Structure formats: structure tokens, C-alpha cells
Image (tube, each protein chain N blue to C red):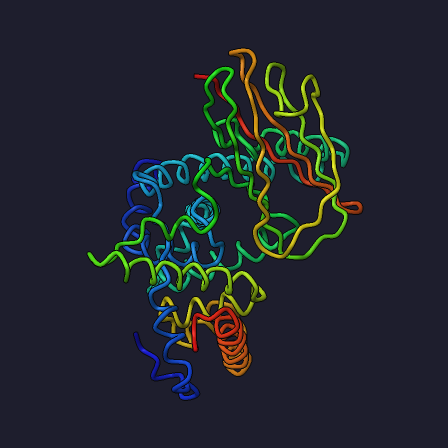
Length: 179
Length: 179
């Protein structure tokens, strides 16, 4: 490693630098690069077509129509395609803990977390409840939320986790499949 | 340029830089799913600028800058877009679990503990400090490369590096990692 540009390195830094040099990372999943290229060329082409359509509309088009078109493009854009929703597979009638990790770049006091469950999936200890809300605080970095779920029917579905703080909110989705 | 030849050209231009770009994405985001998201967004953006990319003599720094700007624009938001789902037994920091080590289980265990504590200490740094120390001390980026990537003056980067190391030493001394 070249640290010749770092004249301020101190002897006392050496153990730390050795440790940092050893700090590991996880590789991308197998086949990810090839898939990423395919998705990029497909999605990139689609966006180029949309951009061309937008340009072709021209300035003579009424503003209302343009806005409507923009909305349509945005609605069409795969901001959260079904295929990209993370998923877990559970066995029927067997409790399964799913750990959700929220990354936050700021500490949040008194944030509200609401979990909405699909029919046939329950949070252990909360029988029959489709929606559970509680207040929580988030620290800077990763925040772990373990959810102990149990599937009562083989249907599965989407779990929604909505995080609200002040006037800001974000909703995350998790697909539950039953084996 | 038709779609097929464009895709092939794109692949030829960007693939040699994939490993370095993925490592950058991982160090910026700190997790595989988020790194893959960022990497994917970069490729989509880069494919849309294929005509520019063809004329760039050194695509690697250009691609890295685009990735960093995407990270700043899209990933430094309230609770990042991606929620991670971690199966039971694979909590944050489990990336350390697959760490290759020596045949000495005692040494492996000690190393794992030190790296786990380093992981926790890094989470306590601000994002700016964490990124600088990971890029410089773990990935071996030169100060000038970080300047080019982030647009931050070298003096500021040095200052962040100094403070980040000092804070890490402080945390790791307090928890007994360093004597």
C-alpha cells in the first residue's frame, strides 16, 4: 500500500493501520457483474427512449399535458420493481426471525415504526394484529429490528415497514414466501 | 450505434474496472446489497453516457467520480432507500464470519474479535471520516485520488484522516483492543 503521500503517519498509528488494512469486505454475489451489465444496458436504453420522447414533445405542448406525461414516465419508472423487493422464505407454522437493518446517517429520537403484515402472517406475541406501531430511536449507522414472524397460511405476501420521523417517512417492503 | 454493439462496447469499456468500483461501492455503503445497488446505478448512468465514455482516456477515475456523486445524491438520505434483510444468524458484521484465516483457531478468534471491534468503532465515526479512513488506509487510495473523487481539498482530507485515526485509537484503546 502506498502511503508515501501521508507524511503525518505516526508510529502510534501502526497497529491501527495494520488492523484497517486487514478489514474485510463481502464480495458481490455470484453472477452479479454480468446481471448488472444486462440490467444497465436494458434500463439505460429505456431511459434514453423516454428522454427522446420528452425532448420530442417540444415547447408548443401545453404545460398541463407535459406534466401529465412526466407523471406517467415517473409512474412507469421501476423505482422499486417487484423483483428487487428483498424476500425471505419461511416454513408454515414455524416461527422465523427476520432481522431488518435500517441504516441512518443521523440519530433519530422518537421515530415511529409501523409494521403492516399480509393476511396469514403474524408477529409472534401479537395474534390477529395486521398493523403494529411503536416509537423507537435510531442511532447513526445500522439499526437492527428483529421481527419474529409466523405464517399461519401458505399464502405469503408483502410486509411493509414504515419509518416516520417528523414530516419525513420511508416505507420498506419485504416479500414473505412460504415453503 | 445499435443496441447490441453499444452493449458490447460498454462491456469492454467498463468491465476491467468492476472489481475496483465494487470495492469503492462497498466502502462507501458498508454492505453488499447497498454496494450492489450503487454499482448498478452507476452502470445505468454510465451506459446513458456511452458516447462520452468512449472518448474518455481513463474511464476508471471518471466512473469512480460518477459513483461517488450518485452515493452523495441518493444514499446520504434519511434512512437509505434500501432496507437490508438479514437472515437469522447473519447479523451486521457477519461479513467478518467468512474471513479467511490461519489454521490456528486461537489466533483466528483473536483476529476476529479485533476486527469486530474495529467494525463497531468505524460505525461510531462520521460518514466523512469513515469514508476517508477506509479509502486511504484500507483501500490504499492516495490523498490526491480521494481529492479527485470527492472534490474535497487535500488539507481537509488530511485533517479528517488524522481525526478519524485519533478517534479510532481512542475507541479501540478504551475497549482493550490496543494497550
